Amino acid sequence: MNCIFCKIASKEIPAKILVETESCVGFLDAFPLAKGHALVIPKNHYEKLQDLPTDINTEVFSIVQNLISNIDSLTGATLVAVHNGKDSGQEIPHVHIHLIPRSKDDSAGSVHSMFSQKIELSESEVDELCSKLQIN
Image 1 (cartoon, rainbow, N blue to C red):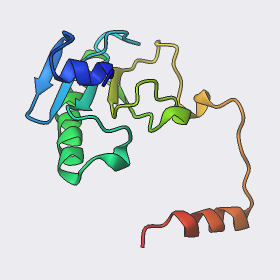
Image 2 (image 1 turned 180 degrees about the horizontal axis):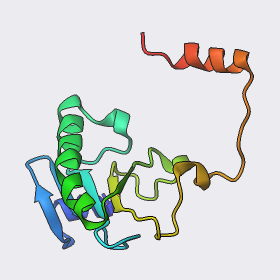
Image 3 (image 1 turned 90 degrees about the vertical axis):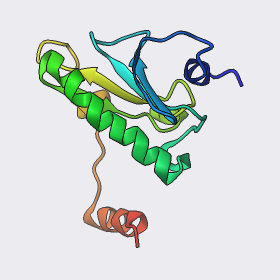
Image 4 (image 1 turned 30 degrees about the vertical axis):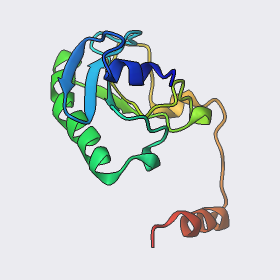
């Protein structure tokens, strides 16, 4: 497989490792958006969050929860971001969680600032979406 994250996980490509477990690894992003920008990945290849086995999902987010305090200490705020699939902006088709230190002067905005077009939904459309997306 020609996945850069798989190669980092298997140590074929060096990375600045922040934390490592049997199934996951956290490391500094090679192309950071801010000082301290880190990624947390499962070592095995999974493209989307819903592909993760429950135990790996738990481990990934446990690492995120533990690492975020260190990242947060840099600026006092951290953006936690996941692009889940190519159309969401995922550039590498391997689950990865971004931990990006944020500050009021960093020129980035809220998640809403990512979208130039806002949608408007009728009450019936909202109700239909709610029914469709609810977990039973």
